Image 1 (spheres, helix red, strand yellow):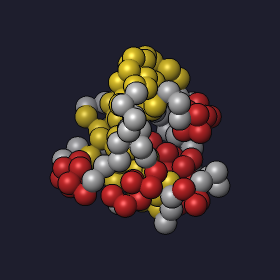
Image 2 (spheres, helix red, strand yellow; image 1 turned 90 degrees about the vertical axis):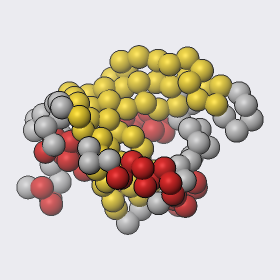
Image 3 (cartoon, helix red, strand yellow; image 1 turned 60 degrees about the vertical axis):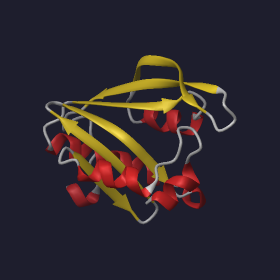
Length: 143
């Protein structure tokens, strides 16, 4: 997982194996896997947070991210969440397009939140989406 994450991210910094261990050891966290990527979320009370979504760079723009996002949302609803939040680097246009197409809307902005490898700063865009059975797409596995 850390190897995949390292191929996917520079901003925010990629997670190392210890980061994955910490997040996955938390009983509130959950993992969604596919052959081409992963998503890790956390559900607390009626809110969920998408902590990371990573798709192998060689398999992007083929719908894998949308599929994992749907898996994350479905799992979050199963855990009692009715609202999902995430943050994304403001210059990650591909991810922002994915999230907007899935119904996420901007809820805030954290100025200069991320530090790039060159030391410059990048804003974080905070997005949210109401989660209900109506707003989470069904896949053949969940029907």
